[in-house]
Length: 312
Picture: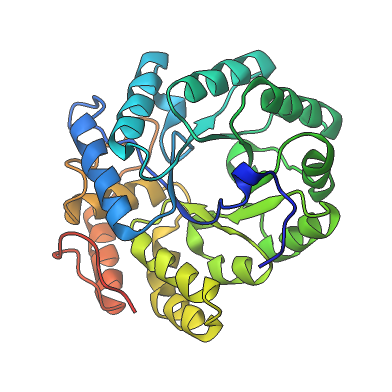
């Protein structure tokens, strides 16, 4: 992987960071017991860290008090065994700084920050620079144009790495390969890239120099296995594992439906108690559930098995 001249506290940020859903009970109330079991499952699966309150975490559907409740529950259950990164999404700089400082005060190890809505490069640079100045934990750019409607150029990302005090990006703008290469070529060793997009391009992201992935795939042990093979220099084994499970990775990463698929899978695997998705949000129909289970079976897994799989 690319050699980076990053600050010491960022040097070891790599691997699979699971974007966790926010579990709710059947009545839509935050389910702290399921947060606890979800954290334990992720740690058993071997993830490098947890990312909460992103788009998948339904941050935009939570009250301020619920946001605090979720952060507190995840950080307490993780208990320092893995870092917890917290999503920030606000309409302006003051709101983003408030959310970032709150997350830091509650034990977050980093924040991943959505861009300003429809702002130009100069405004985005100042926004991220000021958020990074306001906290002592790392700020991660959350680059997801399909959800946020805002494109962040490779040139801006690289400048933030060189001049803005922001040294990581969760990069989810296809085509991912050329943008990763462009960022790394311009950033002069001051930017670390994580992939996303459900893991659909995970192998290619690693080959382009990504440090890992931040995504919500409900079989995190598969992504962990791919990463460990690749990090050990066994690219053929990483590719073989990726190819074997690609039908499931592809099926789960469906626009609008992905969250429901992931929550359903976690329920079937005994990880959370309920697959409730808050409105607005698409629910699964019975045919989709059968398709998902058939796809899981086709790659040699079973939703009847509880806990972590020993994958190839």
